[in-house]
Image 1 (cartoon, rainbow, N blue to C red):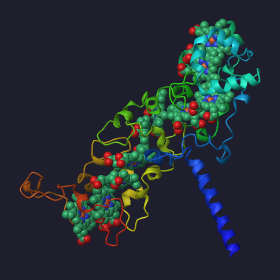
Image 2 (image 1 turned 180 degrees about the horizontal axis):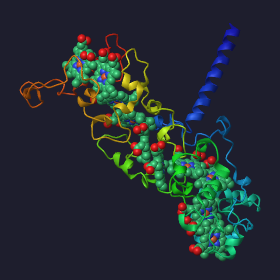
Image 3 (image 1 turned 90 degrees about the vertical axis):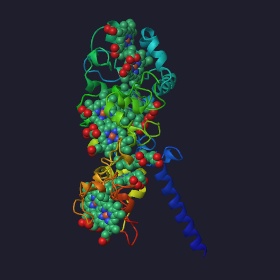
Image 4 (image 1 turned 180 degrees about the vertical axis):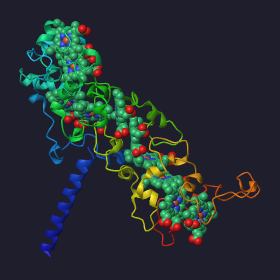
Length: 354
Ligand code: HEC
Ligand code: HEC
Ligand code: HEC
Ligand code: HEC
Ligand code: HEC
Ligand code: HEC
Ligand code: HEC
Ligand code: HEC
Ligand code: HEC
Ligand code: HEC
């Protein structure tokens, strides 16, 4: 009896520890409602909370370990220290003071006056301080200041390599010459989190992907314009091994994270659902009901042209405005009867009626 009880206790502890580990991995904080749906996907910074648990992700280099960034264009330059920079850049420093980096770096600097701060990102500044208009003498993140993008990103990756950025090299954004600073502005706290270049993640993405952001304005859309979702719920902008920068291996796996009931298992599966949700839905917005790519019944008839109910309308009277309107055009069309179009668990459900 006692052994049994102890065994149960151990099992409960194991289960609790497991649950905690999972919770810690997926959810940085407890949340409710929509937030709960959000935190099910691995966050883009899934390494930040527990780097050791993520393959290949070493701890973000701490501010106390900050090294002066390498600037191949100014090999002879030496560090001059923050005080020299801020003597000329007082205004930039004022904006910078409220950011994650500044808070951490200033604390580290107070503890050890030799810590790199500005120069941890901008590289050694002696040549630039002597001649501020000399191109390339300082690592600048603006397009026309002569610093190659590779030098810019390596400055950040010196501390932020790995984890969510494991696939940065070769990613579509890297190949298209984006720099970290296209999405991030560490010089000012413009967004609540993530040091985004605009007020929010969605606005940041919309600077280039206006078309996609626009699709979310269509009549059917997930609540992204309402601020309850972000592009990064489904995409990792830093690069992924899957197509379209999706955070999961397949489209369906992404959808299941929030629409778990569509995963099944189903006694009777509908083949196109299992294959790809995008056979019938679009992820970014649709002017059809329920994000459909085409209205029912045309949607269904793209594949079902030889059903027991023939495809064609035989007479004008069968149209929705006619004397004997066809049931496929009434109500919800095919889904009036085939209501369980995503799959059915009812013994009488092979035709997805119930
Ligand atoms: C296309 C836009 C884009 C580019 C380019 C980009 N990021 Fe990000 N980054 C984001 C967004 C959006 C987030 C917020 C993600 C979230 O909240 O899940 C983020 C989050 C982060 C974070 C904080 C969370 C974490 O992952 O630890 C760091 C650090 C970061 N990015 C570093 C970089 C570096 C370094 C580069 C360049 C190599 C870079 N980013 C390039 C959009 C981008
Ligand atoms: C003697 C004054 C002076 C000092 C010291 C100085 N800067 Fe500058 N810096 C300037 C001026 C002036 C410009 C603008 C040059 C131009 O537009 O041609 C500039 C430009 C820059 C830029 C490029 C801005 C852009 O357009 O992208 C960066 C980055 C920068 N400074 C960082 C630093 C850092 C970091 C330090 C310390 C290591 C530093 N500066 C020290 C005067 C100074
Ligand atoms: C975490 C890395 C990082 C640190 C630390 C940092 N900067 Fe910057 N800095 C950047 C990036 C990235 C940009 C480009 C911002 C943009 O896109 O406008 C930038 C831009 C600038 C510019 C150009 C004007 C502007 O605001 O865009 C100046 C000047 C500058 N930094 C000076 C400094 C000084 C002085 C310090 C130290 C007090 C400092 N930076 C610390 C990353 C950094
Ligand atoms: C000296 C190391 C170091 C360098 C260089 C550095 N960072 Fe960071 N960065 C950190 C640390 C430490 C944090 C805070 C811990 C964390 O969020 O993982 C941080 C946080 C961030 C965050 C998250 C901020 C937030 O409020 O959520 C972003 C985004 C980021 N860095 C982007 C950049 C970009 C872009 C560059 C290059 C311009 C850069 N960092 C350069 C060390 C560095
Ligand atoms: C500075 C411009 C810029 C910003 C900002 C930007 N992107 Fe991109 N993105 C591009 C370019 C360029 C491509 C290459 C394909 C193209 O031409 O559309 C691309 C491609 C993509 C793709 C398609 C990937 C593929 O394999 O087809 C996705 C998904 C994407 N971006 C998501 C995002 C997200 C999410 C954000 C915000 C965090 C973002 N982008 C911010 C420029 C940008
Ligand atoms: C609900 C998940 C989800 C959200 C939220 C989402 N996307 Fe996508 N996105 C996808 C899927 C799935 C694909 C793949 C489409 C395909 O394979 O045809 C995709 C494809 C893309 C593409 C490349 C293909 C194309 O249609 O041009 C871009 C660019 C893109 N998304 C950008 C964004 C941007 C920007 C945002 C935020 C405004 C965003 N996405 C929000 C799921 C999402
Ligand atoms: C991060 C969570 C999340 C992910 C991932 C996600 N969704 Fe959604 N989806 C939502 C939320 C929230 C709603 C709105 C639910 C509501 O209003 O009751 C929604 C609504 C929908 C709707 C109904 C829209 C309407 O107008 O009635 C469809 C269809 C849908 N999602 C399909 C998809 C597909 C397909 C994918 C994968 C590409 C996907 N979802 C991924 C959160 C998500
Ligand atoms: C064969 C076409 C088809 C495929 C494939 C499909 N759906 Fe649907 N889906 C529909 C139709 C039709 C509706 C509208 C049903 C209605 O009007 O009641 C719908 C509605 C939805 C809704 C909103 C109503 C609800 O049932 O919650 C969500 C969410 C949804 N689909 C998610 C998904 C996901 C996730 C996938 C992939 C696993 C998927 N769908 C694949 C046809 C499809
Ligand atoms: C992308 C193609 C495609 C679309 C779109 C599609 N289906 Fe299907 N459907 C299939 C396939 C493939 C099967 C499996 C056929 C089989 O097993 O012989 C199937 C099976 C079915 C079955 C069961 C047939 C049987 O013989 O048991 C019904 C009922 C059905 N679909 C209804 C619908 C309805 C209603 C819609 C529209 C909401 C729809 N389908 C949209 C491809 C599609
Ligand atoms: C009034 C109800 C109703 C409507 C509306 C309806 N169906 Fe059916 N459907 C049925 C019934 C009942 C069966 C089963 C017949 C059987 O099992 O013998 C069936 C069978 C099917 C089958 C499987 C048998 C076959 O012929 O291959 C498919 C596929 C199908 N329907 C597709 C559709 C499509 C597509 C639409 C819309 C264009 C539609 N149905 C509209 C009631 C309906």
